[in-house]
Length: 238
Image (cartoon, rainbow, N blue to C red):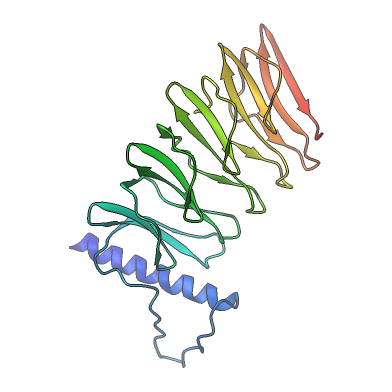
């Protein structure tokens, strides 16, 4: 009972925080509450839903919130009080907001296959989806995530699946600061390479983990090992 009460207090606080930020951003027309008076607004009904409060997330700007919930034998994600499409399961963790808070993404089970749901639209089916989840570009307009088919992994950028590789599961997609470029490390026939803008780079014995990064001008840089040599690789924009 104590945990339930704590959860309710936490949610109430977050709801108040979201409501305050939405008003501050000009997203509501509710008149400000009088001094000493509690202002209350209904964000949606939870009737018939078993909410997973541990999945609750608030957007970076504090204007939106989302969480997963069970409805009978199905699962769905509630965003700002609005329930999304129903699926057989929602991957553990929590939904992901774009930097501007206007878009939300999450992995869901549809039959025996996993799909990434972005803006309530399901993407291509996979046997598995990386638990690193979806990544939004800095401007919030682009998405990227990793999916598995059999023993192969692919990166899905803007809803389009790329080339299959033996492994890309330990890494994650990197967007350039201007959101125009995307890159990720991948393994092919025992060698490692970095795929930038869907084009495979030179092969190495290994790519230093988390080393791929974009400079302000869009140049991609990463550290790689070939034999007994350490290489610093640069890939400028095309």
